[in-house]
Structure formats: C-alpha cells, structure tokens
Length: 198
Image 1: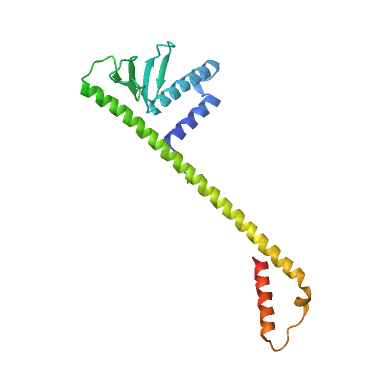
Image 2: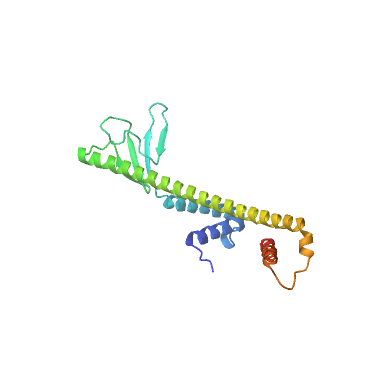
C-alpha cells in the first residue's frame, strides 16, 4: 500500500475544493470566489515556506532593475565597493552589506557564501556525472541485448543454412556400428540441433 504524504493530501483536498467548491454558507458564486481566493493564499504561503533557498538581492546600477540570484555577486562583501546586497535565507534577512562589520566578519561571510556556492556546484556536477554514468550503463545494457539478439539470430540462420546444404546427409540412416566418421557426423548433427534451439 502506498503511503500518502501530507503535501499530497493537502494539495488533493485543495484541488477538490477548487473544482467543486464547498457546501453551506460559502456555497454560491461569492462563496466559490472566496474559497478560490483562500486556496490561492494558502498555496502561496505553502510555496513560500517550502522554499529554503538563500537569495541575494541588489539593484543593478546600469539597468536600474532589481536583481535576484541564488548565487552571490562577485563583489559581495569584498574590499571593492559595489551595489548594496541583501541576503535572505528562508525568507528572513540574514545579511545587508550596508551594515558595517569587522574585517574578520566580512571575510567570514564572503567565505561562507562562496563555499556554499562551490558546494552546490560540486553536488550538481556529481549529480550530472551520476546521471551520465547511469545513461551510459543503460545504453551499454541495451547494446548488449541487441548484440545478443543479433548473435542468436545469426547462429540460428547459420544452422538453418547448414541444414539446407546437407539434406541428403540428414536423410541417411546411421549404420548399426558407428565408426569415427559416423561419430563425427552424429556430433555435427547434435551441434546443429543445439544451435537451432538457441
């Protein structure tokens, strides 16, 4: 029996409410709108709490737009000045470059940010490498299966050709006493039969 997670149960219930509405006081066109609005708000809150990423936010001076990234900008907590960077972790502000900190704290924050970035990149590289190895293994297995099928077909075809070439030999009766030639013929017949069975 498959276990259902809380998330699947929650989303299934919300989908049912979305499609069918609810009975009672919330029924009717206004109730349906209210339920859909509540559902959207609940899903938004659910998605916001599920997001556990560190986000870096700054204003790009050249374009005048707000930039957001999961990776720290190159000037983050460096000695060279740059735009103000605000760092959010799980929705909470954890660092703001407008706040002056000691040199040791600044270097520790910068090191932590770029170490985390390198770790995420290494994990992503390992995941891609593992996926590539799995694809290569599946491809090799498939090639082996195809080669096995083709070799089986070619062995059966060769045995069939040999059988067609010597129908007179198959039709002859074996003598009551077998000499070395008769034994060799019998071995050839048995091996041809074994090849046909495979």
